[in-house]
Image 1 (cartoon, rainbow, N blue to C red):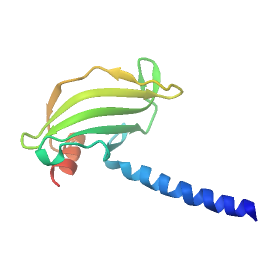
Image 2: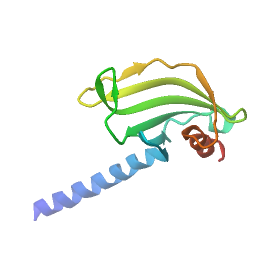
Image 3: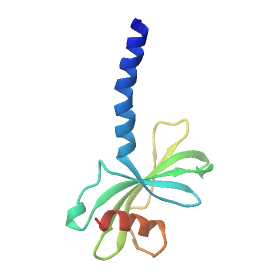
Image 4: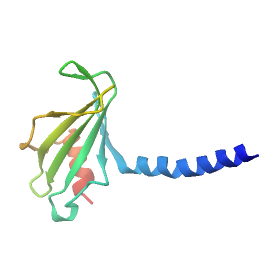
Length: 129
């Protein structure tokens, strides 16, 4: 009987944590590489017109960076809502079987939001609210 109570108690503790973690990363687009999510917990500056956020790419097939298999990639992006421009502030690759990410140099790379792209999907999701 005690085991049943422990199981129920453990289940009740784990369910809120699983649910809240899934709310942190919101899906906004998919392409040939995989699914893209933005992080609601680190989103800043949304109402100033210059939001900064992290975007997570979860690959749907095996992808490699410098010979190592990528688990997922995080990109820090600033969006200039009025100018329809994205500023890529940094990228980090997280590898399967490794705990330390690899920084991929890309700071300060500016791109215009192009219709029909992943960038536009992110722009629409963040700047239209």
